[in-house]
Structure formats: C-alpha cells, structure tokens
Image (cartoon, rainbow, N blue to C red; front, top):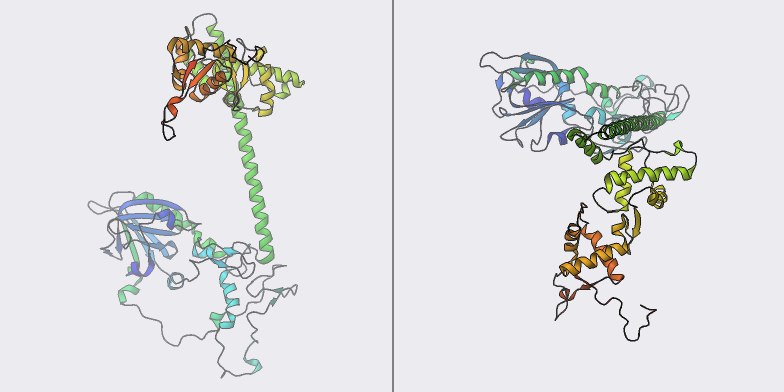
Length: 542
C-alpha cells in the first residue's frame, strides 16, 4: 500500500498551474496513463494524466478527478527504473519510494501565512514546505522561532530528578537572549548565528529534545508486505506513448533536487546565507542589485531596438529612392507599386532619413526642414486620397513614418504654420468651435466648402448629415477623394450654418404633443434668404 502511504489527495478539477508552489515549475505532462500500486494495478487510477514538476508527481484521474487524483513528493523517490515495453506490454516507469512521510504530511504551518518572530516579516504560504520554513527577509528558520516562542508551554522536567550540580548544564529560559561567544552581543533565542559577527551561537536543546523518549515500541505496519522495501514502489504505465519525455523530465527533476537545495538553508549555520540584521541588509542589497541589473538590461534592449529601427528606416528610404529612380524613365511595374504601397502602409514612405535636431544648428532651419519632411509625408500618404484630416491623425502618422527621433507635440505645433510654404496645393489649418483642429486643402476652406455645400443642396434638395458625408464628394467631377467622416462633416456643416450658408430643418425631431425626440435626423436646406435686409435691420448689421 505504498500509494496510500506516500500520496496526498488533490482536487483534480482545479487547473494544475493553480496547484503548484510559487517556487515549483511544471516540466512535462502525458495523458492516457495508469498507476500500479506496488506490483498490482490500482483499480481507481487507470485512466488519467501524469504531470512532472520540479517537486512532485501529479496524477489527475479522468473519470473521477475530484476523488481519485493525488500527488507524490519526489523527495521520497530513492531510485527509478524504465521499462520500454514489449509486444502488448506498455512502457512503464518505476519509482522506488522511501523515507518518513509523517513529519511533512502533518505540517501545520505550510498552508498559513506566518510572521517571523525576529523581523516581523509576513511570509507567503505559497512556497514548497522546505522553502516555506525560512523567513524570506532575515533568513531565520521558522522552527527555531517557534521553539523560542513556544518555550513557555514546553513540559517541565520531572521534579523527581536529582538536583545535583553535576546533573548537567543549567537550562535557561527559552525567551532569554543568547550571548555571542565572540562579541558578547545578545541575540534573539531563535537565531543560530550572531547578527553582528555571524559567529555560531551555542546550541540549546529544543523542546522536542527535552521531551522523554517513548518507552513503547514503534507502531508496526499493517502487514508484512507493506514494510517490504521491494514493494515500496509505484509504476506509471503509458498506454499511448510519451514515456521517454516524461522519464527525461523525471530524471531532470531528481538530479536537480530543488527541495534539498531549499532545505539546506535551514541547516544549522545556514551555509552562506546570512540571518538576522546582516541577512536583512543582504536581502535589500540583492534586491537593489537585481533591479539595477533589470533596468540596465532593459535599456540595452531599448538601444538595440533603436539601432534596428534606424536600419529599417534607412533601408526603406533607400528602397524608395531606387523605386523612384527606376520609375522616372518608364512606367512603374506592378511589383514596384506593391512595394511602394506596402511602405506607405507601414508609415515608411519617405524619401530621406528623418530630420533630427543635431543635423542643423539653427532652430528655425530645423523647423523648416521638419515642415518640408511633413509636407512630403502628407502629399505622399496621409492626404493623398483625402483633402482634410484631423491634426492628431497627422501627428501619429508622421511619427510612425519617422520610426525614430519622434516629434513631440510642442514641436509639431510650431511646424504646422510653415506647411503652406512647402505644399502644393497649399495645406492650411482650420479650427472648429468644438476645438477640433484639422489640416485641409483649398477645396475644404470655410468659404469654398460653404459654396460647394449650397450648390449641392440646390441640385439635390435637402439632405441629412450622413447623406452629405457620403454623396457630396462623389458629386464632384473628377474627384478621387474619399468621403469625410460623419463627425467631421457635422462640424463643417454646422460651421456653414453659423455663417448663414445653410439652414436646418429640425421639426421632425420634436413631437407635436408631449415633447421628446422621435429619432428623426436633422435635414439641411440651402439658405435662400441671403442678401436681404429685414425691417429694423441696417445694412451694416448684415
């Protein structure tokens, strides 16, 4: 019954990642496996999935994952055997188990958060049992701290013992500080090395050692077969392959013995691990060093990315220059058109490398070069198919085309007024009442658009904002510009209304009785009352 002795039941309905310790790593998995308990098949574990981690072997049963799943600590595995299978016999991995499981299986401290009695640090319960016994800040083992705090509840020695001075050393209270034999510093009773000089402290008997030894013999096994080392094993049978990968992961975990490396720090002296004040200082120092290393690596990655970005921009500029030179003498082939359109979609359709401030000494000259570069980006890509575009879209597209040395918003706003000098047709700015700022070509100026809109409404009658956005650009002869967005069209039409070019018909939006909207859109009409002087109005007010 080795399976009953060494396994621990788990809830297989929970994902395996949620069952791992914080310091545990999943190495491999394989489905369609069965379990042998000793030399016999375990009837309840014949169709499931096996998982190998750095600390444990998991079995999640297929038919009954909530009641028939278990885990086994790999620290109990003394050796392994591998059987490759023959004819109808499946491959098997044998795990020989040994060791005492009573102390670890009944560990009361593992599932709870515990507070270190030395430094007051609250330690997480998510680590493996060996790592959870050590304070993550000062390095003091939990067992030592518990012994020092529970000393008052320890049973006293029998009063019938002789009181002779030769009976042994005088036992101090477990709460008394321990003086260092080298520097005489009074250390916390749970410490095993001095906080100042790290000298080993004299070891006092623990509460467990002071207890009397049991007079009765140990509990016998239920049967002779259970205590036989030859039967202390389990076998994992692989019905559909995957045995070599799982066995390799198992050997990797057993050779690494992560649980022993964690437990070694709990030993007396702690090895190279400092405890107490020196341990806290070293932990803080290591944390700062790790952060500095991470920041240094991140900055190196960023610098490498910038170098690659510059190389990419230079390659795109060179390719664009070659395509332009090749298409100047004859018609551009289809392949060149495809490459050029791809560069435009990536925002790399620029003739030269991006202009940076270190290229020019004069700030005014730098702004002019930036305006010339932005003009090329607008006419080659952003405004090639439309005559009006929002300012934020221009800024994002320009920086995407540059790739490196991005332009801040303040510099971008200083470059915008210089655009009319380097664009044909001229690109100007326009700001609406809502605060939206756009760049536009001459057909989208306030007067030009108002005249176009009035003519469109005279020819086609009243239209809604949506119909104007979709139909007005198509109505222009020879126009290849894309239609405006509805929100932008609404801004421009309302601006024309304020200038008196159009008027709205919103009677459909109001109910005759009761109030409230009925969902009818506003319709726009041309303003026929233009140039009239009304009674009581002077011509100067018109």
